Amino acid sequence: MDKPLISLTNIEKKYQIGTAVSTVLKQISLTVHQGDMLAIVGASGSGKSTLMNIIGLLDKADAGEYRLQGRHVADLSNDEQAFVRNQQIGFVFQQFNLLPRFNAAQNVGLPLTYRRMLPAVATQKTDEALARVGMQSFRAHRPGELSGGQQQRVAIARALVGEPQVILADEPTGALDSSTGKDIMKLFLTLHDEGRTIILITHDEQIAALCKRRITLADGQIVSESHQ
Amino acid sequence: MTLASHCQQALLNLMAAKLRSFLAVLGILVGTAAVVALISCGQLATEKALAQFKALGTDLLAISVYQQATGNSHTGQNTIAINRWRQLPEIVPAIAQIAPYSTAYQPISFRGKTLTGAIIGADEALAKIVHIDLQAGHFVSFVDSFEHFCVIGAGLAHQLQQMSLDVPIGKQLRIGQSLYTIIGVAKPWKENGFFNEDINQAVIIPLAGMALVSKEVKINNAVLLLKSDSHIDGVIEQIKQFIANEAPKLSVFVRSAKQIIASMESQGQIFTLLLAVIGGISLLVGGIGIMNVMLVSVSERKKEIGIRKAVGAKNHEIQTLFLVESAMLSLLGGLLGVLLGLALTWVIAWFSQWPFKIYLLPPLAGFAISVTTGLFFGFYPARRAARLEPMVSLRAGI
Image 1 (cartoon, each protein chain N blue to C red):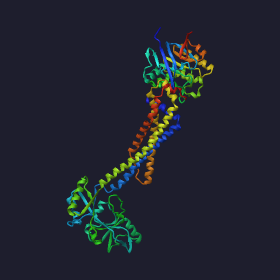
Image 2 (image 1 turned 90 degrees about the vertical axis):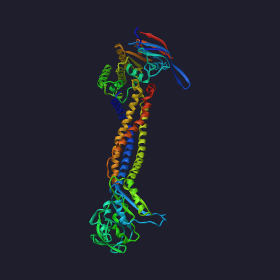
Image 3 (image 1 turned 45 degrees about the vertical axis):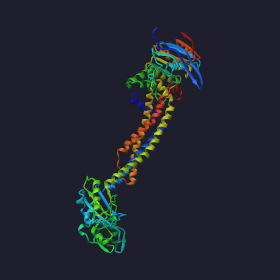
Image 4 (image 1 turned 90 degrees about the horizontal axis):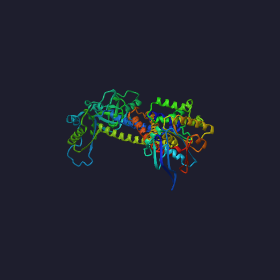
């Protein structure tokens, strides 16, 4: 088997609230390979969002080892982590997290503004990403003028535009009705078929069932793992 | 991220919060306008005051001698004779011209009506040095000496004309016991800070003739025109030496136009600096306004900061984004403030009848200080934004 894209070994995360310390993640070990589509399932409070934030370098583990493409990333400086997020990771959030004052194209192009890129090239990539999610005709619309499903498509385009190695999606259908949710999942499956690595967090069994591989978290531990 | 895209994004954010941006700009605008207007007005006022001294030229000295209060020695003179005064330029070569003069206050009347005015004993050198121009007739001269001739100032001439509706030349004024024929009328004379007598209300008679007006009168004053580039301190020293030799019982007081101007200039600078500080305080308040607005902006845009960090913004890029925003606010405020400040200066100058002119320093200083203030007060909010943890800010409500 080739070298894993993501490899977590004995990851631990604790939160301190007042004097009480609660351990959110306990001894998590996990590998994700290029082209995987992984669902992380669990009840709320099971630690799945925390795990995704650690994988996405938005949060730091208290113990354990995290390698991205064989490289230790947990100990990188803030700026180096920002660089990794910009180049290698694409986020999709439950609440879309689009900037309300920016139109669809400006939102999609946001990751590119943090790369030294010619404006013409950035515009072209932005248009390609919008086309990829079927939103090219909405490029000048602001988030407030779009439906939830359309906003999530724009958010997915933003995650795609920088050609990241992995897309992290945190409950991407959680704020959508079931039919729109299915459309979004179809989009993720198509992206997966094109060879993209996708890690998806959900508490919805139907959504998880669409993924090739799933792990289940309970109380900060992996309690089961299955492949289809 | 390039500066251009920083500016573009900052502009987008500022436009989205128009009222707040406007208020921040207003604070800086008022502060900058205050700095510009106060410094400009300070300079204009100083300039106006100096112009009174500079009108006569700067190479002037005024000498006054007076009896020493504690002069107990009876030997030596207590006056300097008119011819000795006139010989002073030979002794002190830096003196180009000397006009000794004396003043007396005697009743002056015309056709039985009393006039108010001073009597000055002088000769044509005084007319040259303090710029007394005549509208008619000629000035009293050295050769007139004991003739009962006089020249009257414009104010006095006006009074006479109201009484007699006639040309004053050739008429006679009574001074003390004697009658003096008016041989010249001066043009209105511009008062200035250097020569203390008011020529407009004066009757000028030949210097030697002052003895006829009053026996008490002594020649206690002189104005001197120096050759340009003379060493003023040296000249003053030589003059004091001369007077000490001539009349040991006299004290000397010398005023130099140059020295007065220099001390007025430094006073003017202190005055202007004081005004600048007052203006600076209002600019400081404007700066605090910017900080306030930016802090609100940072806490309102936590989520945006989180999103930007998630897609790869580095801390310094977040910091620059907010700094560019406060720089833009202060730039706009500074620019408008300079314009408003100049307009205010114009209005104040118009009401105070100062000649208006634009000095380069106040607008430049006002603009530079406002932008610096904006950056300074924008720095803390920007740094606060940059240091937010991505997770914490992503969780914030939008």
